[in-house]
Structures are given as C-alpha cells and as structure tokens.
Length: 85
Image 1 (cartoon, rainbow, N blue to C red):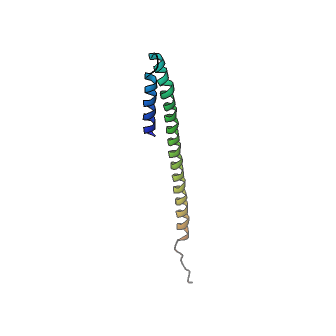
Image 2: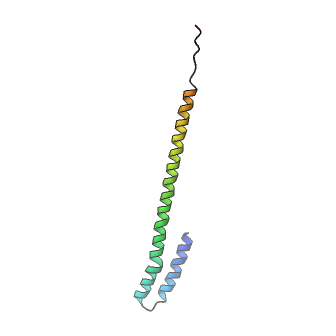
Image 3: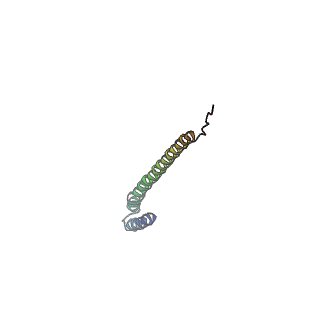
C-alpha cells in the first residue's frame, strides 16, 4: 500500500509543478494528494484498530469458554469414595 501512496505523491507533485502559479500548484498538491492520502490513512488506521479489538475480544471470549469448560470438567473428575458399611 505504501508504494502506491509514494507513486501517487510523485504523480501529483509532477502535476503541481506544471501549474501556472505557485498557489495553483500548492492547491493541486493539497487537494489531490494531502487530503485523499490523509483520509485513506485515517480510515486504514481505524480499520486496523477495529480489527485488533475484535481479535482481542474473540480471544478473551475463547479464553473464558476454556476456563468454564475446564472448571466443569474438574467437577466431574472428583474422586468418588465408596461407603462399605
């Protein structure tokens, strides 16, 4: 993904250099490069964070299930004493 962003920065830089004035070139660079790449970076970061939190929640749920299953199996494995009266 980074190589695409670097290539896009290059393309937009070349577009900005060919503008007639400095202000037009600056605005081209900002609106065609900085804003779109900033938005994509922001959404990708949020997606990565959301996926990590979902993974963490799933792992915690599975751990809780394992603990409840292991405690139930320990109850079943208690030694039984026989009464020989």
